[in-house]
Length: 512
Image (cartoon, rainbow, N blue to C red):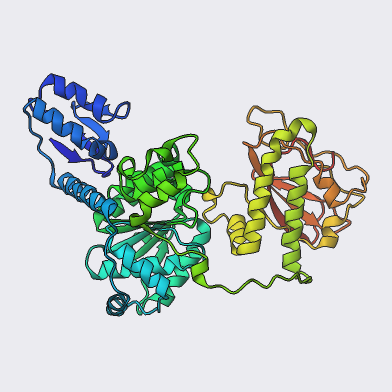
């Protein structure tokens, strides 16, 4: 007996008078090292391995003169997999026949899609619609999001899919939310997975990190109805089963009704980067589709051309030349920053100083430079990303500490008063968190500016971070330091301005 597990990601095998030799060899041959035996004697194997081993299983059943009773849900997946294998055989022999642009325009209008597509977008749409699953490798600016919405509208009108799951970086969420207003007469409801009631929306957005973290919730939603799954910036899962994001995407692929990937850089470093992408679009078919040269650690110079030739019927691509863009007019203009822009810029400069002002023995901590680069990219492309980092929305998805902007006026930040109070030194505890012990006596002004004071911070480990907030008091009142554990040392009441910082764990206080 073979059936799907409740999560839909595994197959449960139960023995009913099966020969011992066959039963003992199932886990070893279908999923080496991945099969698990339950208390009731049933065998649990990943669905991907089960579908990939169907040929071996058929031969083993014939050899032992046995039959298997397959549950309807699992039988539907096997039939779909067989149909996809047959489609691959035909596609590798000849490219599919695309629909004419005129018929696409009329079908889109009937489906409630109102945006006019350019000729190269209609060409890409016709090619993708002729495939059960597809890939769009067009360059940035070619309108991959618009084509994806048009494809979903037609598949939805045909009754093949009911809803759409988009796996994309956080920076791409705004484009998916905005484009839907421009594309449909009656815009589909778009919601992030983190929003209340998101699973009742027509389009659900989730980033790669949260897909892996909330996999059980997402997979139950995908299995519940016919779902169209799109990976935007799909090269982020190129590690495949070796990475957490890639493993979640590949497991999800078996249960999606339609699968599409969007990326302008499918293989930025190596032809082997195509393997995971192909295995998502066509599960367990990469060995049949890609040439052997794509898997070599030292591919020959012609490897990329061979890969492109093999994949040609399975993807579409609009080149930069086809966009017919005018040559860029490059000029430099000096502009005076507004107050908030100046504060963002100053915060980034401070972060840079912290990343570069290290001792020789701390050179391993140069990894912090990547944090600064990410903030620069966010500030230059979409400052709203900095706001999300500060407020903590979807913060668990970020791979760098959150950056807080000091909202205190520059004059107050740079002042160093004579009756300032010294901050407590961190305790030498095993957990390495900054734990205040007791207030320390006031000391005369050291004359250091805020920048000089910042350079005294040192890091003990990039793996440990602490959040520290302090209240900046107008001179000549003393400074009050607070932590997550509460107020440590406070002086006379005065006008206050509070700023929140997120820095690596300090080893010494700013006044030390």
